[in-house]
Length: 84
Image (tube, rainbow, N blue to C red):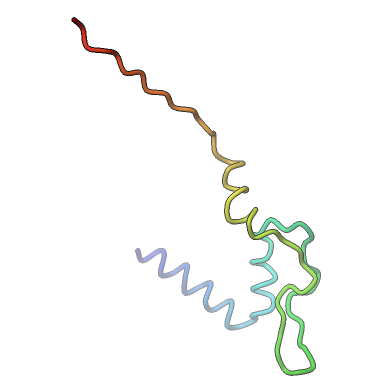
């Protein structure tokens, strides 16, 4: 548990010190169709967009990528009739 808290504290500190660099690094952990070249874009109205030029498929990330790393096994159970 202490190790997780230490890891969290290190990650939190990195994100606070330089959010754009931190999130650019985190983007490398995602399977992008087209990886972003821009991490954060400031818009004229004062809002921001993260990874504006990146392309991904959220359905693939939520389901399909996990199926690629798991062996799909068929399971059959044979039920024998009771002996007479």
